[in-house]
Image 1 (cartoon, rainbow, N blue to C red):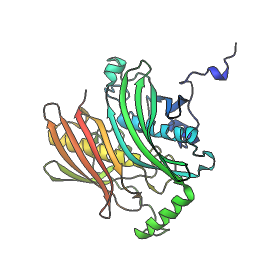
Image 2: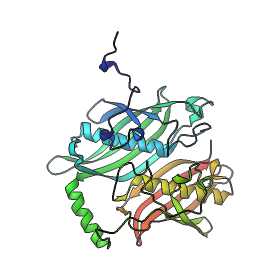
Image 3: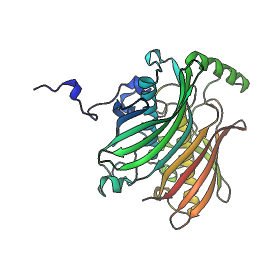
Image 4: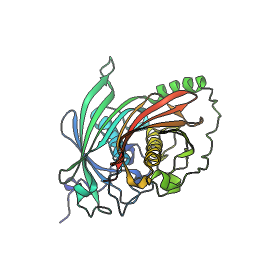
Length: 334
């Protein structure tokens, strides 16, 4: 007997690329969604067991990749905005702006999936709730604050993530960007520089693939204080799945994750692979320009040397202008 389309299980496929603002099908992490109320949605996701950027530690993974979970929620924002809050999908006519993030891991892979969890398939239920809505005088929504609770299919919560995004018509965004670039002396024909080499090895930032290193020219300023330049490679097939003219929020998150891991590993004199990024809170103040050097600074606040627990305060800046600020929680690998 043929199975009807309506009986499709929530993990049987992936959502349409356009719905989650992706070009490549291998970058789509969501598999299905179901509106539950005016401001509530249940979405379904599957973490990749092998990926060009996320979840590099596919065999011996002891933790969830927090940035992969953030990406799942970021894709969920688009689904909810398009399907429940009237943002047109056709024509790619709207620009979304990532404003705030607050992400926390509340469970480990070992607890959620048993100790034999490294290469195990991870399917997630993503419960979305709208906590705040911003509207124009016309009544049209232009921004949302989402709260996400991510759980295994057995109901074990692994993370809580809040994201605030706003959006505007793309023609208005182009007008704003023209003014912004003119003020920053970025000529229309100014080329995006090629990604420089890096003196860092992947292990220094808890990475395996050298192409995933997003830092270079890293310096130790003083006790617990570090500085690095962002290494942005527009050829990267994940970080630049689609062409853009500014530095995505997800790239800034990775810059700060890697610098935080480097800074804490040197503060405690341990291998970066011994550390886990379990919390990330950030605010994005303005647009980061691909044509301009981006500097990241980090300051480590030690909480517990025995547990390798610390908070790292970070800032990304260009031309002396603050682009984004971060607080990243780092601790001993569970």
